[in-house]
Image: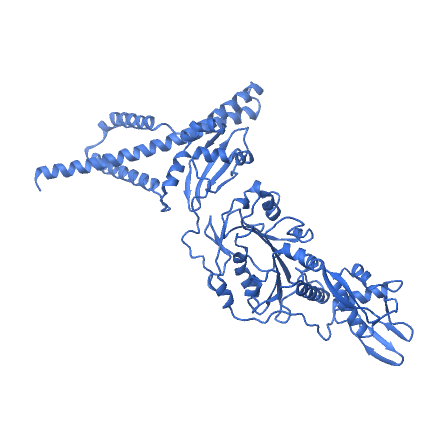
Length: 595
């Protein structure tokens, strides 16, 4: 290699080193400038606090003044020097140290000192390079680069006042897997709720697109808020197709974790039309119908989703079928509660009596169509008459008492308003809320709670379809991207025997007496075959006079259908009798009841 080539190579290396050094110098200068812009207001606040403390305690006899002085010192210490001043101080210190100490250093120390300095300089450059490198591997898009630039404290401070945001100052923005996160410092006139109401001003200052989801919530300490721009999702790139190996409900778009909802909870699944309620519920319906100790009952008057599951679930698709299955469920619930061992809080599911999940698809339709259904009944004189029956009392009873009997109610609706889409007696019993996109903040508050918006549960801002918020008392308001379970996958699932209530020949109730009917000299035993019959018989026995059948509904708290079945069973067995006026009484006279 010639002398000219060596010189050119050295020049190239020197130019590269100079550019690298200048680039890192510029980055460090920008970092220090941003920190100074962020922390200097804290110094001003500390000085005002110290001035107030000195006015209150001029002699310095209390801790108020000393605390203010300490806070001012700490605030000053956290403000870094400008880069030019830092370099100047370093050069002066190095020059003084060299002028004073170098003449006294032995010659053999010079060599090791030069090696140590070279090693220290190399380590410093490596540390700076590692520190400045994006260890997450995230590369900002063009949109994110523009947003990150406008979120810098210098840009925010220059434009905040003209956008109506005077008194706020951003910190250093961070790019995460869930988007851009930035802390915002608030003065005494601002709160996180007020900043949330100024979202349009923030969007204008940043030049953000209208469809970009923005979340503003309280910061980790007082006087701060947290601004999150959902430019990306932690679920991006994941295969969200449901398979038996991927049985979760969905993926958290912030943390990337698999989200599951365990059985045994009373659910409310809400979302406007087209938000994806049916698709979001399919993984849950699979879990509720899988296994020997799980059974699924679907009430679907639209006859669309229920038809997909009729090979492994009990499906009611007409108002009469709804009332019949609700009567069966209520009877099953009362039987389980009547034989529940003393000291045991909940029923233990078995293959014979499994955990039953009752899914009401489109609750508003059920409330309307199954509220007053005509039924023909036979009177004591053999005539038939038409009565109106409703499924709502039974569903409300299941919502209130079904959890102890392992009969859980899931309510789905696209009109999440109390009284229209959700019965008033069922709404307070809901334990877990799954909310997809809704139209108004009022609907979001009904599903997720009155404090939903204040805590960041903004379901009215969710994209459509397939993104939900799940509030169970443990999760943060992080959107969940639900898995997609195709209709063909549901149809191809293995068949299961649908659940149906069968009256046992005899159910032994711990501690309950056996009812014996005495006819002349012949004695026959008629045990109470279920809890409903026992409650009806007890109500008739404790009454001072014969009871009408419609009054038994009030006395026992059972539905009309359940009372009708219990009365029929008791009259057939001879335990009670119907008088000519239609009233019911226990067998008296020659036929008396003894316990």
